[in-house]
Amino acid sequence: MTEPRRRKTGSKPIESITFDEIDRRILEILQNDSDTPVQAISDAVGLSANPCWRRIKRMEEAGVIKKRVALVDQARANVPLTVFIGVSTSHHGIDWLHKFRDLIDEIPEVVEAYRLTGTVDYILKVVAPDIATYDSVYKQMIRKLEFSQVNSMISMEELKFTTAVPTTYL
Image 1 (spheres, rainbow, N blue to C red):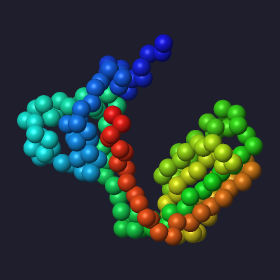
Image 2: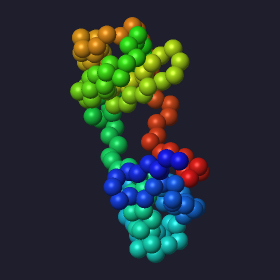
Image 3: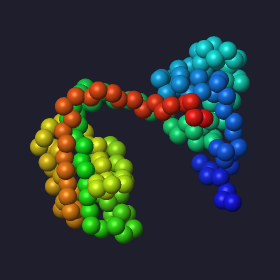
Image 4: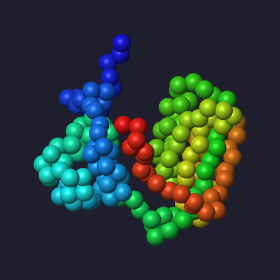
């Protein structure tokens, strides 16, 4: 039997923590607005502030809450263009994967990246102010690594965007 994953030294394994409806509600509130004051959260879930704060800290220590961030409006940040890039490669060694990770880490316009099953090996989400900037991202990628296929898809309209994950499975 393997040891449960730990977020950092001293944190509790997630498998040793039980979640109840109050924890789920706290997570829903924080996913909607992580700046919500503890007092407002505690009022919403029917706890006093200290037990509510302890539940939040427990979820942070367990790695359920990874970090709190600000969501930036793409258009107002002058990066209204979203391009999804399907990448296929004939290189499937760990060295190539490390080089690919290093490459996408160097490019701030790449905001998400996933390794996939199926005919496309990776999918990237790129945000940029315009096509010319996206083209420079594309050229930077093909200069540094060899791909067998790069398929770009420009988003016409965002139909749904959320960072919230379902809490029903905790």
